[in-house]
Length: 281
Image (cartoon, rainbow, N blue to C red; front, side, top):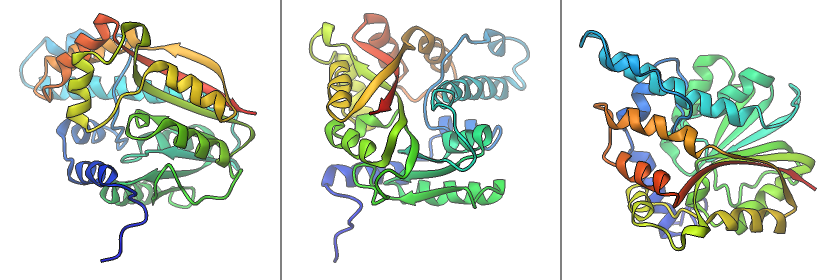
């Protein structure tokens, strides 16, 4: 049998298998609220009243609030992509079921290419694009973000939203720098472990095992960005803003069992949730 050229290693195949099979209600139920399937976490103050009131409708209130928080997170990222025009082309690296891609198109009217190693997510997202009537401008591809095959200098902006922990950062940023025009913008939101804490904490090891990922140290992001001509211009520490989302999620039927690990890691200081925006020079 011919090897699949998109999946370069057994590890990548394991990750692809995980996301091809993933049907978690905490992703699907939230996406059903407005058709934006995000596959990431939320930030901001929680409206705790969703846990109060009559039992009937309680789960719907919770789902709506969790989705609002994850949409806020995506909007924070999208607004950092710089001034974009409808004719500009941008890339969502690790696009999942497409939520951030659709938000970027809604805000800027730009062309969006989403990239994922999950064939089922690519098919799902392309069907969403068709249903939303934007398939001519928002397209999803079964490709590897480390070697996309797109033309050099063809993108004005690229982002990773909670997907950098699945790849080697040196290779990722080399590819992003290749794809970006000079002056283009790269943005990521990611969880990283705090070098000042030492090696990854037990809670971070539990998160890695849960998601089959490898959370990188904070220092590696900045070192590899600069080495690949991506110069940080904005760094936002979203750690405190992320904690309420996890506190709410832990109290709901949508909890997956990993919530306490995130809360322990954030509150101990061993784990940080950062937005980093960088210009390609």
